[in-house]
Length: 150
Image (cartoon, rainbow, N blue to C red; front, top):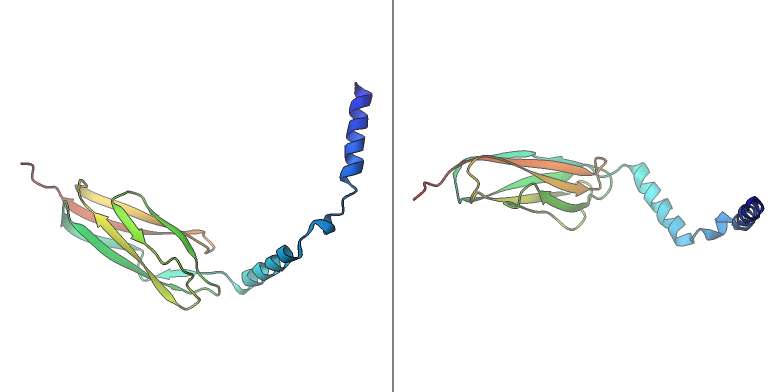
């Protein structure tokens, strides 16, 4: 049994080592990697918000309120926001789907529906980006006056 195992391992090693790793590299992948590395050396995308928190103040239950978080790409490569997800279904973000070039601006629109959300509400919106952090967070809050029960 030991002989069979030893022969099997030795044959695997012999055949596995015959492949030249350099022959497996595709030229188009190498070019893409060089381009990516060049962009990394330039510096990545950076997002600078005019504000990262918004307080709607006191609102009535059932009110639908909106705000805008303006931002600028202060980095050296294009900014890509892959997704924006709120911590609750009552909060709906809208974000630019196209890349934001360095020096250019964009905005995240956030709509909050206070229906069945009485009292103090704190919600966060997580943006998945190509910044160094990989994600950015903006927050909203409101004091929601409950509806009077009939």
